[in-house]
Image (cartoon, rainbow, N blue to C red; front, side, top):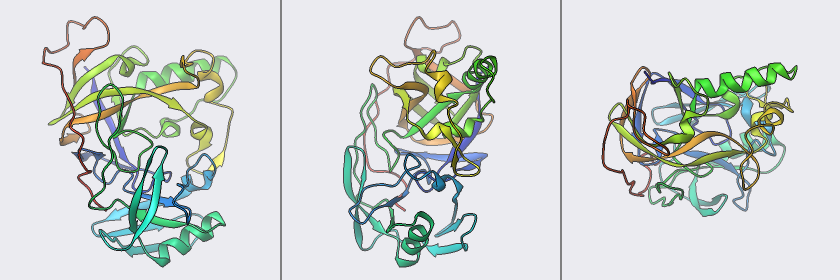
Length: 293
């Protein structure tokens, strides 16, 4: 039986995540997920692709306050500005404005990265439509509300890495929101087209094409390649280029999920296993994120 093994949200895009036993799910994914991002003065977003040190930042959402800590930096705690002065932001094809989180946060990230930076939050009027097989919405995530990965997918990958003489990697290299246990075959998540967990429903959007971030040690914020990208390239190449690991999903029905909840698949890409529950196709409705922080 497939169940949720771990739930993680990432308050600041590119920074460390927070694992929780229970999570509210809004149209844009888990509550507090990627509702802040660090951007350049012109709005271009900062990510681990160019600034791996972001992985060492430990953000915590404490009600109406955001706490930030990182090795070698003084801790900072600030009031979350849910609305106020705007600052340009971008996430790949999306461009818009976010709420400027103040001078103290800007200076903190500028000192950490060694170049002018601003912390922005999702604005109350944030609008973003995400594509894929099931459309939806997202806050500042790369492209979709959720990243789903199966434990067996990592087990299969690490077995191959060990065969090549490398060191296995932890799941946090892939920064998933939902980790599923109980799927025997690696990459079963690729075949899911509609599923429920707890009171929430999700629809498949696309496979996740990986960049260089999985080669960043998420504890130290330092590049530690070439794994797992080298081994993924040997058997998980995408037809359009790059390698894939994990499934991106849209939220079809908001609700609540918890570690231990059964994951029920209602439709598959191929022939449905006998355990799949029959249910009409699900369609997501794009709307602004539930969390506007």
